[in-house]
Structure formats: C-alpha cells, structure tokens
Amino acid sequence: MRRMGLMLSAVAAATIAMAADVEITPVGGYVLKEGNLNLENEWLFGAELQYNAIDSVLKPELSVLYTPEVDYDDNVNDTSILRVALNAVYEYGEKGGLTPFAKMGAGYEKIDTRLYGNGNDVYLDVGAGVKMALTEAIALKVEAMYMLKDPFDNADNSLAAFVGLTFGFGGGEAPAPVAEEPAAEPAPMPVREPAPVIPDSDNDGVDDNGDACPDTPMEAQVDAKGCPLDSDNDGVIDLDDACANTPAGFKVNEMGCPVTMELMLTFKTNSAEIDAASAPKVQEFGNFLAENKGYSIHVIGHTDSVGSDSYNKSLSERRANSVRDMLVGQGIDAARITTEGRGESQPKADNATAEGRQANRRIEVELRQ
Image (cartoon, rainbow, N blue to C red; front, side, top):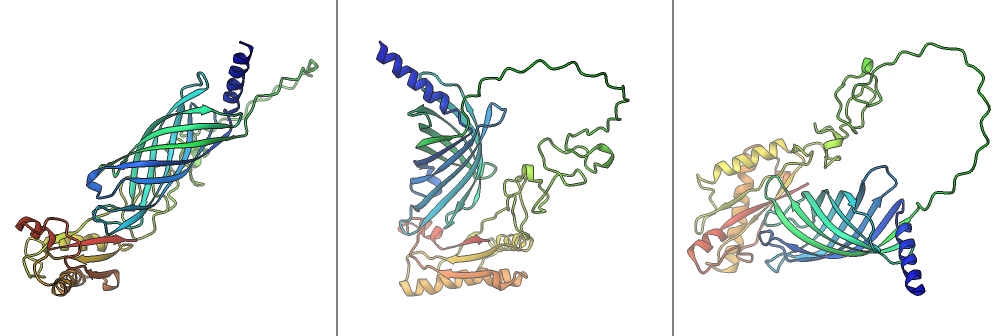
C-alpha cells in the first residue's frame, strides 16, 4: 500500500508540473485524404506550441505540420504540403494522470505542386486528444484532428492522427506569502476634485474625442486615429485577415486571402480550336487575370490516345498555345503565360470509351504567384 501511495503521489506531482507557462510538442502522424483530392494518404511531422500563462480557459496553440512528399493518384506527380494553424485549446482537467482536451481553429495549407484543383487555401480544424504525464515536465500526447479545407467552396476533408511528447517550461507552484508588518495609519490627504473622465467607447486606447473609428471591434489593433490596422491594404482588417501579408495585385475573399479561379476546356478530335461553347470561359478567365495582376499561369495541353505519341505531343502544345493566344488577344501580358504540351501521357479518364477520350482532349491551367 505504501508503494502504491508513492506512485500516486508521483503522478500527481507530474500532473501539477505540467501546468507550465509554455508547452512544446514535436509530433508525427498520418492523414487520411478525401478521394476527390487525387492525393494518396500522407505521413507528416511538425510541432505544436501552446501558451498557458493567460487568464482564460482557452489556451492559444500554434501548429506547424509538414509533409515532405505525397503522391498524386496519377503515380506521376508528387508534392510537399505545409500547414500552419492557430487553435484554441480547452483542457477538461486532470484525472488519474490523464488530461483530456479539445481544440478548434483555422489555418493555411500551402501545396508545392498544385494539380487537379488542389491549391493553397484556408482550412478549419477541430480535434480532441489526451495528455498523460510521464515525468515532472514531460507528457505523452495523442490526438485526432479533422481538417476542412476551402470551407466556402470545395469543402475538402482530411482526417489526421498525431502522437508526440509534450515538454513543459516555466510555471510552477507560487511561493508561500510573506507576513507583512501592519501598515502605519496614513496621514490625512487633502481632498482633490477628480480629473474629468474622457470616454473610450470601444476600449481601443484612443479616447472618443480623437477616435476616427469609434466602433472598432474588440481585440483589434488600431493606429493613432483609432482605426483597425490593415497591414496589407487589402480591405480586410488584420483581426479578420487569415492572409495578413497578401501582396499587391490580388483580389481577396472575406478572410483576406487571394481569390482563385480554374479553367478547364475540352476539344474536338484532332483539333486545337477553341469552340463557341469554350470561348466565354476563356474570356471570363482573362477578366480574372486582368483583375489579379499578381498571378501568372501555366497552360498544359493534353490529348487522347488516338494517333502517334509525337503527333499528340504537338497537338497538345497547339491546344495550350490557342488558350495563350486568346488571352493575349484579350490584353493579358504574354510574359505572364507559359505553355506546355503533355500529349497523351496523363489521361484523366479511360481512353477505351468515347466519353473518356473526350475528357482527355483538354487543357488545364495552374495559377502561380
């Protein structure tokens, strides 16, 4: 019984010590991808930094996760993926050496090779897990995370599981209070009239008399005139801006991130001509490029399997050049456009059917910043 009591005391001491000011957790994990992303499941690694020295039940956490290589389903291309997220963590309290927690937040995913509609975008996440104290400053951390990328458009899903060791720094038990000598009776002070109070309606540190923006949202940083900061001048204040360093030349969405657009066309057999049904799509894409001068594009032509490899390579190049020429004719600078023909090497459908061959006679466009 004495040994059991010592073990329980050690666990309790470790749990108390894990209430650190800062927790750093190197993690590794595995991600299950939604099928329509055309990406294989992936291994990843990274780190999580949680800050506890604030008077709030929700603790901020910075998460950085990196996948060095994941294959596309075409078995030809691969890409690296970097995810950076800011989460709010709620811990339910320690019981028996275990501390369950839940968290949610938002992040940004950067994909190095963007194919099949995959691109850099915002994602929302929600997760849960548990920490188990191992020593006075180390705990085992296991968690699961659901990530919803591009929640306002494609709504792509991923499910991840992580494991790591949490290292705690700072904090500790408060020192015992020191007894103080009783204070001497203060000498009577002359009565003074209180200074007039100048109101600050939005509590931003700029009084109403000099506040050009008296309805600033709570927690927003402001300039000398009391107006919310917009560091990249994109019309979305820093408080609400998920992409706070957007360069000039990009339109942004309501979260302050550059808007994107896709262009995919198909062609008739043995033809590089943009037909009447496809021309409006190219014109609309040209309007998008004119409004977002920060983007350049790479146009990729494809063919079905009918004909020789060399002829199909030439035909795919002519299809890509047709799109380039139409955009240049619309006023888009040719220096912003590169083209490539891949012939029949990357079919997206079965060439054994007429429908599959029609789908393979196409161009695709990659946006580049």
